[in-house]
Length: 419
Image 1: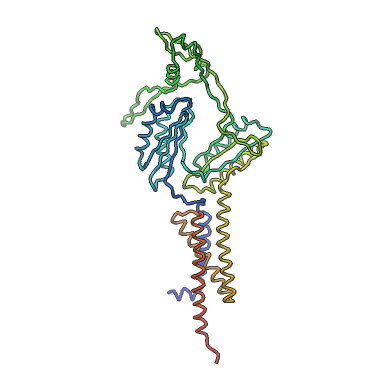
Image 2 (image 1 turned 90 degrees about the vertical axis):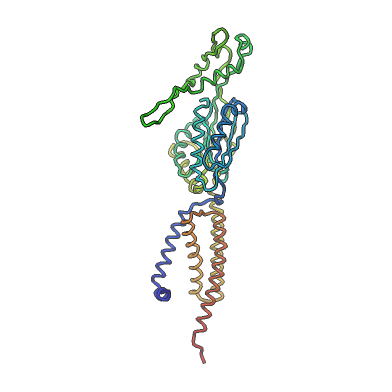
């Protein structure tokens, strides 16, 4: 059967051509990353508590949050970092757990507690942890558009589009100004009405928590909690907040404290070429194609800025796709360089173009077969897998030369000798 296969070159040519075409198509569908994903899924939760101390947060929420997170299936460890104004939880999952599922499980727990937090707190952020090699940043700057207008444009037009990028875990925008309501108590008025700072704080806190009105039960036995929003709607409502004092009387907050809306600069600011810029950042999911996500991210920013028809410059601050392309390109160049040198040596020693073509075909054919297996098994293109292919090229060359030399020798021995 094998002899019939080799005696008729047409099936062999068709099979080789099919492998070349199929392997080449699958090669361009392989996910690309700098390094293989060999870490457990890790999820990070960041809570901005504003003025609430770390000790108070831990007593009110912290211990319960940690216990609930530890009860999630496949969680191997939960650590909490409590600092005044910022609380961080790191949740580590077991090997083989899907990253999206792990993040969704954590977010489900966090959302339940977020409903109990004061509404003035920023949104709790749930993200993958340790994805520093998959982050990408672009900055926007303009001489004709003010920083405030630029931030508003980004939040309303660009950020919603970026959230639709497949494989993007999170996107954020560094705002220019941060508005915060400050309540500054007047000591003389506190003494006059017999109030303490703790009583003012409790009055503000109690107003920001939703009130439970009970449960709605359905015929199938399900129940849904019903809450009433008690949060402030305006600065005037905060100033007119009633605080109980002695003898059943009450006093307005504005009578014992100054309530003002102040704009504060962001904790971080960025400049490009000495000019103040707006930064847009994001990072890919652990199992995503980093290069594809980064390319889509930057393309959307460029397209949206171009559609605005405004004097806005886009600068790529950090793009892992560029480094990945260079690293992968260097490895691919090394592979083809090895193939070329090996083919040249074979041609010089054997002096036959036909034998040289055998080497030239066997090397890429073996690599293409490897691409097909990588696609079926789910192995991505990275420095490790490409480095292994570079080593495999040397083994293929060695094996091809040995086999080819033996074939040539046997063919020479069978040739009739001239007397």
